[in-house]
Image 1 (cartoon, rainbow, N blue to C red):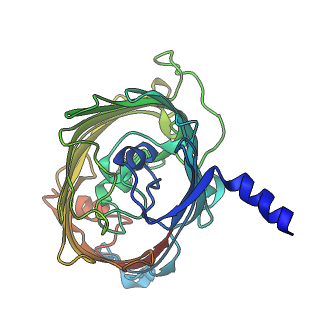
Image 2: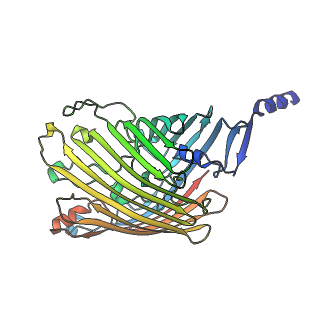
Image 3: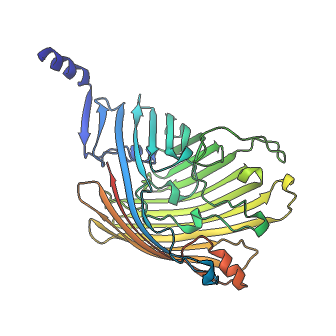
Length: 410
């Protein structure tokens, strides 16, 4: 037994296990999804700090109450005003992340609450040539939208902005084609980096993806008949961070003495998306600020949808959306939140838009990895030309939505 213990000690001597110790912001931002920094339990790291391995887990349990407008339908149609309510597990993520050779970072996670291709939430590795030149391949977040780039579980509210996640409304004959502004998770390759050792910090991301979203883990794209290029998603994002690298969080009880700001612009083109029926172009502007106990974020984005020639449809459509939100830590554990969300869901050629004010709170339990979130959102309709336009605009979106969520992570 003595020899076994001596051998084991010799094998693990080059490694150290650390808990609740901070690591540089660069590691926090390089990983981007789940922090490598040790504010969640522990990680294993070599003594020369060139290798690290960090298992992690995150479970969310939510309770929702959603009330929908009956859109003027007769009650004989058995229209339920309360739907999509009850309990849910949005995420049950198990994974590991870390770095190797001081140049490669990696991340693999499974979402047991997902289905189909969404079970594999992310799987990627990132090779660092220098701070300004890095290459990431695998399944990860496409470079578009501050709200979606935020670390999972550290968003200001448990529901992302409606303008970002809800599908747009197309003419009735085309309702099988309903893209949304968010591009989400996808498979691809990306070149990215941050220029300059000192401030200011300029960041960039340039990537090519399948354009089929997180639910598809296979290659199934074609060549564009119209443009004669691969029918993929081409995406880019530029950011300016005058006070150093911006953490990917909208509220973290461990970060109450920050002074970070980000201004960004992004754009992408999804060639032959929506079952090869459309070519979708998106552009966005974003702003985020962490200043001590304050967090402020704002975004505006637009999507242009044009149809492929085989559809024989000459019309094009433009959709606008955006939001502004703010959070403030009233105490070291309690964060108050508010958001106003705008969505021109029917397109710029049709009058009217959705406006969705929301309020919320986040409570961070000290030292145990628990976060309690609650929010209420009202979705109103404003400026529509006809009652039919008004009724169609919020199809599938709750007029009153309340959600409470308990999250555990390490």
